[in-house]
Every structure is written in C-alpha cells, then in structure tokens.
Image (tube, rainbow, N blue to C red; front, side, top):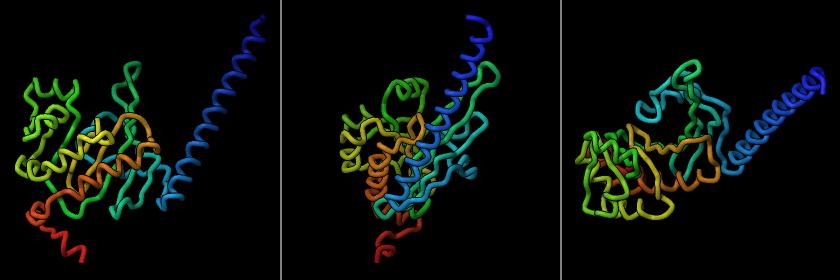
Length: 228
C-alpha cells in the first residue's frame, strides 16, 4: 500500500474519530437535558462561578478550571446542584487532566466545616502524618470513616449515633461529604454520573435533615420557625 493510500486511510480514521466524539458529546448533552426536564431541574452547559464553589478538596488545585454539565433544582425540599468540575495539574508533557462529579445541597445557615471521608488508604496515610481523625463511640464507624472538623464539638453533635448508623448503610458506603459554610457537598472522580446522582443527593439530604436543632440554634437559625 502506497504512502498516499495510507494518508487517505489516516485522514478517514481521524474524521471518524472526531465525528464520533462530537456525536457522543451531543448524546450526552441530550441525556443531561432530558434528566433535568423530567426532574424539574435546569441544565446549563457551564458556569464559571462554580470553579470557586469550595476552598477545599478537590478544589483549589491546578489550573484551567472549569465547571460544566451544571444541573440545578430541588431534592426533597432542599435546593441542590450537580456539576462536573475539571482542572489540570502540571504543564507540558507532565500535565494531567482531572474531573470530579460535584453534588451539593444548600443549608439554611452557616456551619463550621465537618468532613467525612472513607477510611481507605489515603485516609490511613493522612493519619500516619498526623492528620485529624475524630473518634466516636461506634468502632464500626471509626473503622469505616475518618472525620475532621474545624470545630470538633460541632462534629460530635452532627455525627450522632443515628447518623453513624445511616452512613454504614450500603447506599452510603464509600461516600465522602463535607459541610462547608452553607453547603454540604460530596464528590467522586469522573464526570457527572446521572445513575448515582439520586443516591448521592439522598445521602446529603439525610445528613442535612439529621443535624440537631441545638446545632442550628447555636448558629442563628431555628428550623422549627422556618417550617411553621
């Protein structure tokens, strides 16, 4: 086969590759739009303001940050959102692209930061170098999760026995979440996963709904007055 024939085959292959990528992008956008319409949410292709949604992991690293596939709406009476967060670390040949699916539920008042992460290899390594790991009365929970907080007293109030039991259920296994300011959010590596979105929202709203009234009162909000 001659050089010209090889070039033609390469060109055809490249065109097919580009066309398939475009088609897959269109179909993905249509699926996101359909999900939003069926669930009464709103879809936006991107929102630059969301790249500063948080100051902690997985935010704050790298460059070329983007927030795309933005879904906003209400879940179980809570304002909520979902988006794909992407960023790049390094430069040149050593650069690497990363994506994370961010899901958040709005809280009615500001709370201190409380972060719960599965007690896997990363958490164990963090504890070896002195990272915070608040202990609770449930050994099963302590083995499954690591908890860190800017206010350990608030963390103990929020992570009470009923919430520990909830976090040990199968649908919450491996879930990372963080209360930060007026949001509780969770994240997982990869782009938006519509198949797991409802379960992640369910865990977040369960945490939000389980926060004791005295915690809210200590931070200037009374859930009873807001529901009357």
